[in-house]
View 1: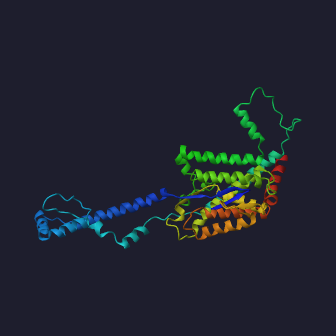
View 2: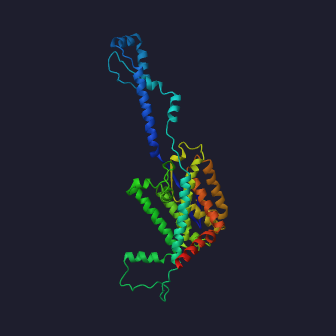
View 3: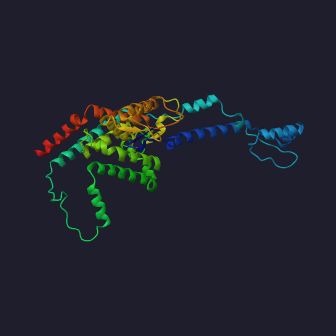
Length: 393
C-alpha cells in the first residue's frame, strides 16, 4: 500500500484481497464427514457388551477416588452420570485416543487439488486489452471526422432561450457540459464504481461473482474485479486517488486531453494487472496460511497504479508527500520506492499486510513502459489513423 499526496492532498491507494471461503467449503465438509465416520467406527469397535453385574463389580472393586478421576478425565460420554451410588460413565474411546497423524496426512492427500489455468487467462487478457484500444480508437476517429458544431458569438453552444429558473435536470446538464472531457471521464468511472459498490447491498450474490478468485478459472473477472471494493474506506480512497490524478495525466503530453485514449489505457492496465495478480499465484509465499488461489482479489488499484506510473514519468519533479508527514519528495524518487515495496510483497510477502502487490507492481510498470516507449506515437495514433482512412473510404 502506498500513501502519498499531490499538492498537499494526501492519497492512499490499495487493492483488497479477501479469503474465498466458499471455495474451501466442499473440502471442509469432506474432512468433517471423514473424521465423523472414523469417530463412529472407533466407538463401535471399542464398545463391547458388558453385563450390568460386570459393570457393578468393576466399579465396586475400584476406590471411589478412582471413579471420580475417571469422570473428570472423560467429560464426553454417551450417557450422563446418573445420581446414585453407582455412576457408570461410558467414555468415548475413539475421541480420547484421537486420530493418528499418519491418518490425517492420508486424508489431506485425498483432498482434490484445484488446477488453476494460466494460458487461457493470459490470452484473454491480451485479446480484451487490445480490443479496448481498437474499439476506442475507432470512436475517436469517428469523432474527429464529425463536422464541427457552430458556436454562438459568446463562445458557447447554441441553446434555446430559457424561461424562468432552471430545473434541477437543467442545472445538472449545464454542470456536466461545463466540465472538460477528462473530468467527465473521471466522474463517469467514479459513477460506474459507485453503482457496482451499491450492488453489494442490493444483489450481493451478483456482486460476489465480480471478484476474481483464481481457483474459479473464470476469465471475465479479470475485468470486472477492477470495479469492486471491499468497503467504503477502500472505495473512497481509490476514487479520491482517481479524481486527483486522472486530470493531470489525461492532459499530459502522452494523452493530450483525449478521453478515449485515457480510458483505453486505464481499462487495459486494469485487465493486464488483474492477470498479473492471477499469475502471481505461481509464486510460493510461505507467509500465507491459505493458498493464494483461494484468496479473491478486487479493486481499481492496478489501473490506478498505471495512472501513477504515467504521472511520475510525465511530471518527474512534481511533489508527492507521504500521509501525515509534511515532507514532499520528487515523483521520480517516490515511484521506485513504491515499486520495490510491491515487488518484495509479490515475491516474498509480508506478515503484516496482504494487498494485491502483483497488481500494484505490474500497473506501475505498465505506466512507466507506456510513457517511456511513447504509446501515443507508436500505438494510439496509428490505430486512429487506420480507422480514419477506413471511414473516409
